[in-house]
Every structure is written in structure tokens, then in C-alpha cells.
Image (cartoon, rainbow, N blue to C red; front, top):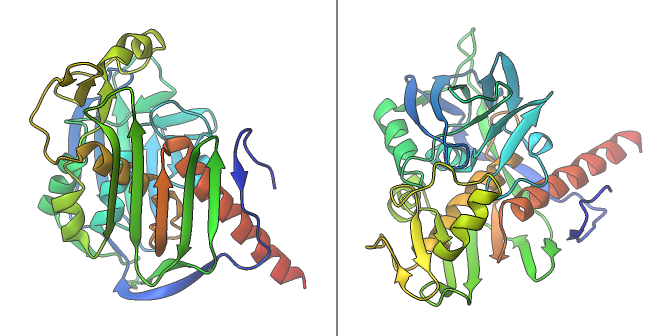
Length: 325
């Protein structure tokens, strides 16, 4: 198995996943969702339109007439501070909040058209809004959902990926592990000793339904360390960042733009990101969020997507081996 430098993954020869019925039909948006906003890193303005789609097509972006599916195979391995999908030289940046909202809200299939006003005609960025997924969740709720049907009026049962054995991926002192479980459980830890106001935090919960996500996760905002802002901007990042798009913490002065929405808002936002990144496991309009107890510590987008990529590779390799035996 080809692995990104610095990553280690627990290998297995058995089937990692079992896709099981959820008792639900695949869904899509009932009406078009359209929002315009500024990108966090590029600072460019873009417009996103989420349109209904047939069952089994999943979630996919249309940019400059190019189709970029929301799948692990299209996720770039190393993109700082965001998740980027790329295909044939075209890329859509900072997709994690939108994908998190779509996955948690039950939008299994949709066409996502995106147009940008930036100088680069081969890359575009999803708007950041207030740094959370709240804008997307509210827009999806306003549009509503409907059962996804094809041209003949046929629907499709929704499946969910169940983990059959423990797996983990590590990089330095960061890790992301998952253990078989009958429900989706997420435990996430962060540690920022340089910023005592953040410090070490843990968040753990069973994600019971869409209501839990909308009330407890969706509104948590992205965060940054104030003393690192200049360095990040020198790297060409967070050009669209401000006190309106993130919560900002100083190493010595604490939170600079309170109040927080939750005492552990920074940690909850990591869960929001994780759900968006793990959703790349979705296949053919089925659930992307892994039914397992997922435990992450000091992880980030690169580790999240590497975890999904490795599970997908092992599952594909096992399926191919089964067909040839």
C-alpha cells in the first residue's frame, strides 16, 4: 500500500467495512440552495449552488464544467489548514464545512455548482461565512429534503459503513483511531499549551441524529492563534480571515473576540471538520460517516483524509482479492 510520508497505518487483511442498510432512503435537497461569500484563505468571493440529484450519484462539485466528486481519491494529501478536492488540474478548496453540513443533514446526493471571482481560473474556494457550518445547515433546513429518485421515479435504500475491526493512523504525536461500535461515537482531543485559554480539551459524544449536530456542533467556529496570523498570511493563507470569520486566541491575552458559543468551541469545531473529512468515505449516495467509535488526538485535515484514504484502499484491495479467489 502506498502511504504518504510520515503516516503510519495499521494494516489488515480482512474486510474493514460492512455496508449495512440504515432503514432510510437516500435523500437530496428539495430545492436549490444558493449562497455567496468570501473564501478564508484566498479572500476571493464565490457563489455555491446546491442542486437536487438522483440516487447513487453522491455529492459532486461542478467547477469550470469539470466534475470533482467528494471522495477520498480526489482529496489532496497535503493542503494547509483546509481540505482540498482536485481533479484534472482543477480544485475546490476548503470544502470541509459544507461537506460536514451535507453529511450531518442527510443530503446524500447533490450537484454543487461553484463559481469564483478570483484571479485563478483553475481553483476556487468555498465561502467561510462565520467560520462554522451554521450558514449551510440553516440553508439546507430552509430548502428542505426529499427522497432522491431517478428519471423513472425509483429510489434507493441508504447504506452505512460499519467498521469490523480497529484501525488507526498516526503522524508524530497525533493519531486517529476507530473501533467497532453499533453507533457513531466521536471523541476528539486538542492540545495548545502555547495558548492556555485553549489548552487541552476533550469532547466526546454519541451523534444520535441531525438535531444533535445542528444544536451542538454546527455553530462551532474555526479558531487561530493571534501570534501565528502574520506567519500564516506570509504563507499566502487566511487572506479572508478576520474576527468575523474565526475565534482568535492570544497566547498571553486569551480570547480576543469573545464570547465563545461553547466553553470547548475549539474542540467542537475539530469534530465539525472531522465529520466533513470522514464524509469522503461516502460511496454512491450512501452514508459517509463511519459507524464506529472514532478517537482523534491533535489530528487535522491531512490526518483525517489519510485515514479515509487508507480505509478505502484496504477495502478496495480486499474486494479485488475476493473477486480473484
